[in-house]
Length: 77
Picture 1 (tube, rainbow, N blue to C red):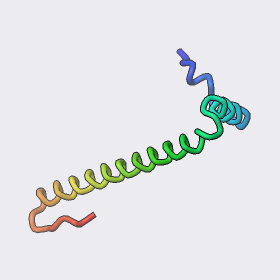
Picture 2: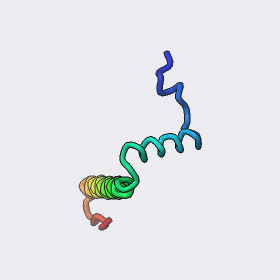
Picture 3: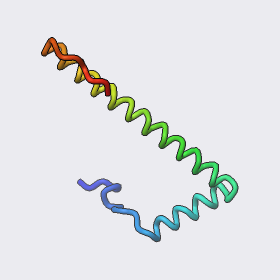
């Protein structure tokens, strides 16, 4: 069974232009930079949270290794 999303496929140049025009009409030229800044900040916060999560996982793995093999100190990540 094919889902509708699978039938759409990748977005081409013409589709991207049409999406941009619709967004421009919906939000207007003055709101578009503000919207883009908000999306950029959100992406930055998401990236920071993902890196913090990865760092915590790495630290947890290091601590688990130290508990298994006493005498070794964990590395600072």
